[in-house]
Image 1 (cartoon, helix red, strand yellow):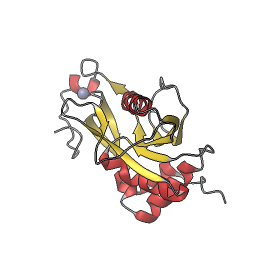
Image 2 (cartoon, protein in one colour):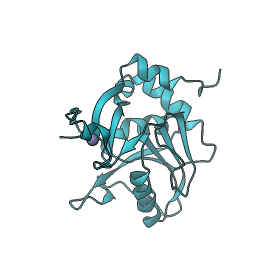
Image 3 (cartoon, rainbow, N blue to C red):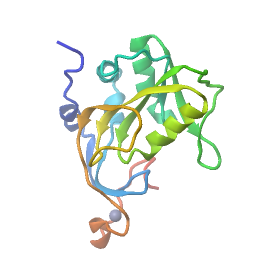
Image 4 (tube, rainbow, N blue to C red):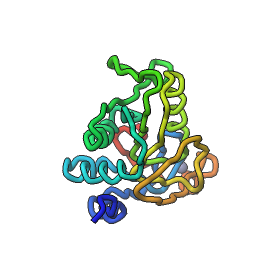
Length: 192
Ligand SMILES: [Zn+2]
């Protein structure tokens, strides 16, 4: 059986990783649903299977796997392990710009596979692509566990996911949950 025969929706449901409430996403958009993939990635054997399936979606050689944030480094690490390459993660500087810290480098001409847990608007992914381009690396693609966007994301490289699971998001002004005065659901790291 190919490794990418992995039912991510079922796994999310089994692990209680599809949360319902009133969430403010990192992008500032509001949503009734939040997908907490860390509940899957906390299990090393599951993280390994997910990473293997995601890695199989890209045939091009990658020299380095890059996560968008330190908290997604587990995914980058596991994808890198299956390919025998480096895993790094991006960080933010004081102005909120995406940068590399910890003496991580991308050498000129290196092929970079970007990985992320959940794609929503694609803005953060685009910032990561810009970062790699600035360092003169080559982004071969973006792999996400779940693509929850409502349509095609404005990306210049292929985005592949293990699960397409479109979920509506709203601006604060248009949010029906805000209009109904439903309090925000607290998720650590999301909307304090
Ligand atoms: Zn709202």
